[in-house]
Image 1: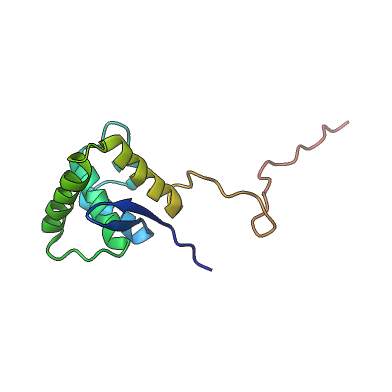
Image 2: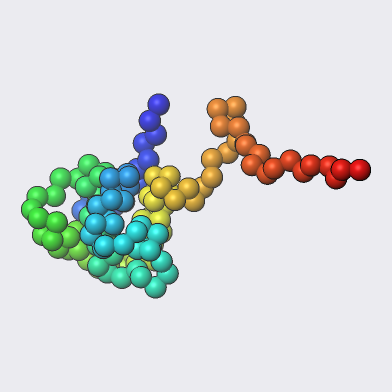
Length: 132
């Protein structure tokens, strides 16, 4: 059974953000570096926020016509008009983006709980008793 793995966000209307493996590939291609390097502390700026939102919205089901550059301009306008101008703050937007990445399971920020279908595996090697 497939999980929904989407997060909602209120912009011009309620939208879905979803990050799949293909979304991560698209981000890596857009920025020319691995996904872990893209989200390093200090690398987060408006270009990253808009690109991540564009990709997340598209993979969440939003139809945005045009080239990726024009799509980013459109998403930037959405963020400006329905987020910044409404004084919601970029920290809240980043929290939603990080929640969507967490729900996606890409970074395994929330480790799955142990259950019968996913038992905890002990990876530690057994100690060998010292020989006498």
